[in-house]
Length: 199
Image 1 (spheres, rainbow, N blue to C red):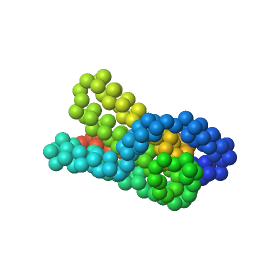
Image 2 (cartoon, one colour; image 1 turned 120 degrees about the vertical axis):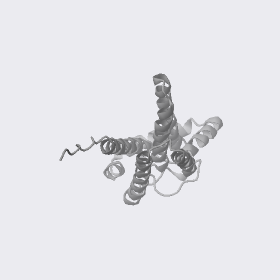
Image 3 (tube, helix red, strand yellow; image 1 turned 90 degrees about the vertical axis):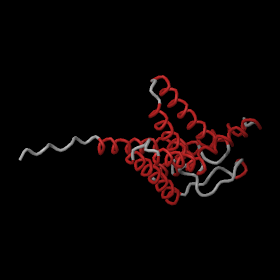
């Protein structure tokens, strides 16, 4: 919320956002627009439901620990709550409607699609690397997930749905939030066993 208020009251940031959006809009192509519309779908609630279905299936087959599922649920709920509350408090307008290529709802800051994408692809990479044993394959998986997340964030700017600062701040905050959740999970699951009483 503080970041959003800072952006909303910073002429320098708003000027930068306007210049970037104007530049990108001036270099749009039909092919790029279609590709960005396809990319932005991966940050939608449909993609989130797809991930939830996979997680439920793996849990029922005892391939995932309940603690990991609870951590993912906490991360997702925390992200959704933060996005909803921050939008209501900051109330930053979106880019001009004439520049938008997709239907949008609500305020601009933060970017819900970007937050969803960070959660979805971080969880996807974590799930995939659980079943991958080669280090190279794990690295490639994480790189692909990071690149996909960056493309979705860019799509929100290219399609005129968000300002650049909306996307950048949202990605950093959500990544920090997921790091906090993972640290808490690690601390709670790595507690040493209590000593055995010899009374």
